[in-house]
Amino acid sequence: MRDSYLDEFFTFLRFPSVSTDDAYKEKLVECGQWLVEKLKRIGLEAQLVSTPGHPIVWAKNKHQPGRKTVMVYGHYDVQPPDPLELWDSPPFDPVLKNGYVFARGSTDNKGQILAHILGIQEMLGENGDLPVNLHLIVEGEEEVGSGSLPGFLKEHRDSLGCDVVVVSDTGMVARGVPTLSYGLRGVTACEVKVTGSKMDLHSGVFGGAVANSITALARLLATLHDENGHIAIEGFYDDVNPLEDWEREAWRKLPIDADKMILEETKAPALFGEKGYTTFERLWARPTAEINGIGGGYQGQGTKTVIASHAMAKLTFRLVPNQDGDKILKLVHRHLEKHLPPGVTMEIADGHSGPWYLTDPHSKFGEAAQRALKQAFGKEVALIREGGSIPIVSQFRDILGVETLLLGLALHDCRAHSPNENFPLENLENGIKMNQAILREIGGGKS
Ligand code: BES
Ligand code: MN
Image (cartoon, helix red, strand yellow):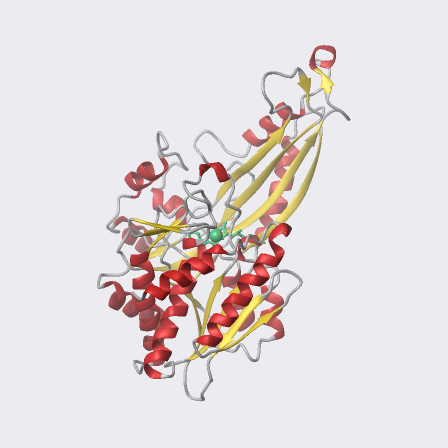
């Protein structure tokens, strides 16, 4: 791999492009501008398109009639680096250690999108052209729900017409095992606030006479699941498609011990999940209800004898075919209202949501993707679904009428969204090969 690749990777990683926090707004613009300049240098036409949120990078080659058109999609925004004290090196000051680059965004998604860009760069350098017509879209709002991208796709629907979308923003089932993901879970979010008294109260003077908002919230949240990990919201599973026999079989045969891998990686004392399903089935084909954050009352040093006026929790639900995000939120509201303990009031604010995705790994383009993966990694391809979400993928189908190939390079222990996120150079290298192979395969074997 060329030395310049590592320099460019580091430059890309030094932009603190945290999309959720307004303090970084300018940094996202700078990162987008850097990408546009980079893409122009390798011979593409590129522009930065402003949106009500963060700008979108849009690049293309010279399109020629009679060729397939491919859209490559990725994101340059990253999750917040917090908690900072748990990083071994600063999150926006990348370092290379034992073949791994450590920095926020190294895997999710800068390393993966850079592999596309470098693959394209090499092909253009060697042949002066690509085997396909290309649109490259790199957005800055994926980690906050891709709010502006549907509008952009609708506005430019005609110019963005394509045959298929290619995305590297998912996982490899294990190191060195090329992986085609044919499904993603959806996600929907809400925030709950429970209020007891109008103000914080002395717990000696008022304790026993008014409801404690934190106790009420804890009891309410405990009604979301039964003791077997099954979600207890009425109607929640009504639209869940049962697993197909072929999938159950195929996932059993994957060359990975998921339970061992997760226990080792997470250091959890034991696995826990819905009874009656294997770990892969729970992760890829079953929905979840998660409490992502909880707050209320005194959290400083020592004790404070207080009854807190309010308590809050942030909830998200991962969704699977055929659940509908809006319908699920209605069921959640109804459940929470029904189970709210006495003596408190509640407000619920709905958050962003994105649908699940499921496609056929054996379609014409799915087969092309499998051949490209096999060429790049020299091994049999694993076909999996994913537990994570990329909300825009279902919009590619709805707005542009095309399917998406998910050829991810993220390893299980990449620490995406966590401290010490990392990406192995081995995957950058194989990713560059894979990206050339997929364009060749879609282009019909010509280079
Ligand atoms: N790259 C991930 C999605 C992902 C993670 C796919 C793991 C497969 C395996 C993406 O950047 C992401 O984190 N998406 C968010 C979406 C949400 C903020 C709407 C997610 O899944 O939480
Ligand atoms: Mn992410």
